[in-house]
Length: 333
Ligand code: SF4
Image (cartoon, rainbow, N blue to C red; front, side, top):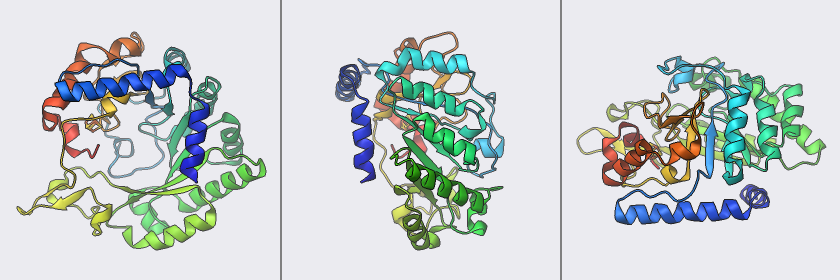
């Protein structure tokens, strides 16, 4: 049901420009795969924009949490955000206002959502849900946000804080309850609320309890996500025992490896980009520290960057030998 409601809201925001652009991207992706020569005929149809790198938590697999970025940290300026939407909004079918950090820590975050929403862009975000106060809940409902993904990886405080270090599970549950209640009061369907549970070896025993809790809370969807683990080759207690929830399997040589065979392709490189708070364009959300900066939106347009030699070279490397790109080795795309 949630997928249907989301699809309908996507469709309502479509235009001929967005559809034809999407088809051009798809066609150029297929042609590039066959010829091994990267062609790109459309403009980005999706974007992730990072409101801030700041975060209130200290999650162990996240550079925001570990404060380990080598790239600069900060908050996106309003001018830059508006420039990106003004230049690209007509082609965007999905805007994820998230990359690293906690979006609600940006004081203008919900104004950004409204700005994009008024330009008929489907907006989504991901949050640890520690800032769903009365005021923020009302503003979220006013903003036109279409999808709110809440990360919650434990159903008891003890297990929750094992990964979400510094987190307060009661606050998350209260915030969610308030949002769902206020949304019902307004008889609104949006934002669609997705509870995202990162399954690890430490919380997999709570899955059944989680499912009944999610049902009682009436969240719109529960997503069980497999965790990306750094240095997975030597194993980790974060890798779940139930292989259904793991991206990795143990090889015959005693080393862990990706379950999915890596293919020399990646639709994401034809679909859209990720923009850091200070306007750097990076290929995807796996490039958390910005090792592959394709251009800078403070002095270039996305249209220029999207077609530049560096981006084309990156796509070409993917088509020829994806394993030579470090970030792509630990990616299930
Ligand atoms: S890590 Fe590589 S393969 Fe994965 S989404 Fe990014 S560019 Fe594509």
